[in-house]
Image 1: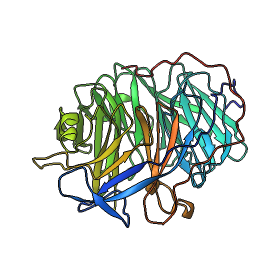
Image 2 (image 1 turned 90 degrees about the horizontal axis):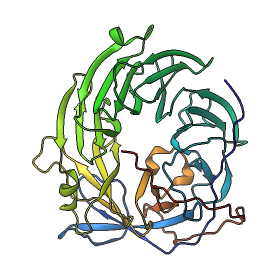
Image 3 (image 1 turned 180 degrees about the vertical axis):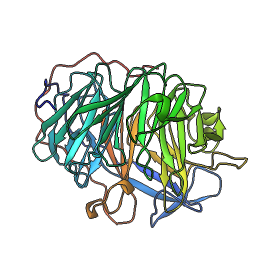
Image 4 (image 1 turned 60 degrees about the vertical axis):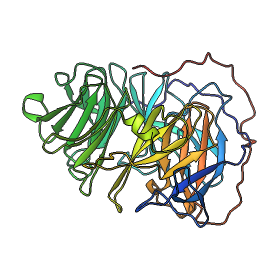
Length: 400
């Protein structure tokens, strides 16, 4: 692996934000709980109110927050203490747009990895914010995932290719280039079957590979699922993670059993159905899906161009495939929300009473209270960031 890297950094600043609220409508299961109730935006359903705990303005409005990742006390590629918002540092080195970040590196829980349009996957030590390793692909890298039966594999999605390395020695093991015909937007190893790799692409195909042994497409491509439209995001759900959800670039939602390749749910008009399930503005886009294993429940997270998002339950096999919004986060953002990170994905006592974090095209990171603790809303401003860098022309990142 190579160390070091070219430096590129975004301007950052903090600003005090006004109080905002999230409304949680109580159903059979919900993303969070609270102790105070009030009327819901949906007819007659009792609701509980959540609040905006903190808000970080990460720049001067020129750059987007694309993704949030969390480890113990840090979040995002710009690091802040999640409970207080204190700025800790930043990792710089990529010369292009960062498409994905993750603390999933098996080598150390303190290592965060990132992939970029510059064709590299970089690893950073969050204690020093220094780059510690680098892998180069020949083209833009959109997604990556660690896995394999021995935990030694690193997969990445590129321009019509799925690449695999042994991350321990940086040796490239395979380049699968016959299964997809367009950009591979997602690669993910299955949580409970670590040798199985899912890839999804702009060509509308979701492929399942067995990564055991010497990889080749003739013997290791297990199945192909045709979504029939460009795939934006996929994720696992189900009590044994035997199913996957799929969001497309034209905002359709489908669910599949990836073991047998069968489609269980296909919702072409998902935005319209979600819009009918709250009394707010039209749902313009979907941010992500969230699955709760204890509740065995899946939500699709939809949003408006004004920055409001809602958690809508997905109910496969029922006439109303998308249910009424069970959580509404409103007032924290002023533009499209790009990423949602639930506090349930972290394992630290510092996050008690926190519902989760959101980031968006307004450059803000918002931390939402679950309402489990009686704490006044508070915002803060950082004295760590005092310089303003030269502004860039704002360019909306929507390639498909």
